[in-house]
Image 1 (cartoon, rainbow, N blue to C red):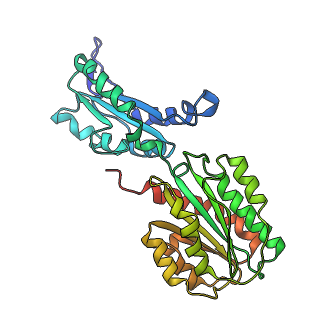
Image 2: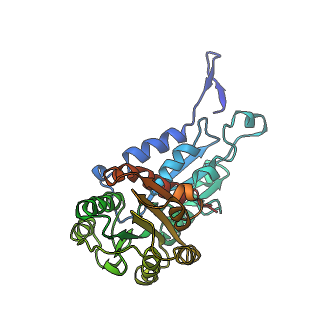
Image 3: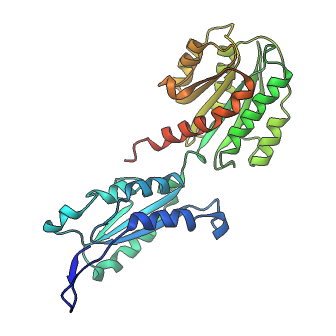
Length: 324
C-alpha cells in the first residue's frame, strides 16, 4: 500500500492482501466443523482501504463457487500516481456475485464508514438477492433417464444405478436445494420417483438402490418426452433443469425431435453412452456444445470414471453464466 517514512528514514511498505484473506475465510470460516449451517446463506464482508496488493479474482471465484456472498466495502482508493501499482484495477467487480452495485459499497473515508451500516444490513438480509447462495450443487432439479433394455442385463443395470448414486452424492439434496428424480425406460417408460418424493440424500440413495431392472426394447425418444412430461413439467421455476440420460444402444425411435423439445424447454441434457451406444445419437441428445454434454465409455465398469468430469462440467457451465 502507500509508502510511509519512519523516523529512521526507511521506507515502509504496507501490504493489503484481501485475496489471501478471502481464501482463508473460504477454507476455515464456512465449514461444518466450525459451525456453518447448511440452510443459511453465507456472507463475507471485505473492507479494503486503498487497493489490494494481491489478486482477488481467483480467490473470490472459489468463494462464490462455495456459496459465499462477498460484499466489498472500498475506503478511499488509489490516487493517480499509485494506480500503476494496482494489480487488478477492477478488483471489486471481479470479486462479487453481481456487478450491478448490490455487492459493492464505496466510502470516501473511514469517518464516513458508519453511513454504510444500514445499506449493508439491508442487503445482507435480502436473501432473495444473495446470488451466491445458489451454487452448481444446490440449485438444480436433476432427472435421470435410465435405459433398462434387455441388452443392459441385471448386473450392468446395478452398475448403472451405482453411477446414478455416485453422481447424486455430489449434490446438496433437499426440498429447497437440489432435487433428484428418475425414469426408467425400455419400449415403455416408468417413473421411478419424482422430484418431490424424497428430500434427503439418504432417502434418494435408498430409492435409487430399490429401482428394479425392467428389460425390453430401447425407445429413447419416447423416454425423453416422458421425462419432460412426468419430471420436468413439475420442476420449480427457480431451479436449473438437468437431464442425465444413460443408454447402452441405438434407439428404435426418433430422438431428434424429443431432444430439440428438451433443449427448447431449457433442459440441459447430458447423454452418457455405454458399450453399443451410438455416438451420433449421443451428440443429438446432448445440449450444445456436445463435447461438454456427451460422454462415452466402452464398458459399464468404467462408468464411475466419468463422474468427476460430469460434475466438473455441470459446475463449469453454472459458474460461467453472466453475473450481471
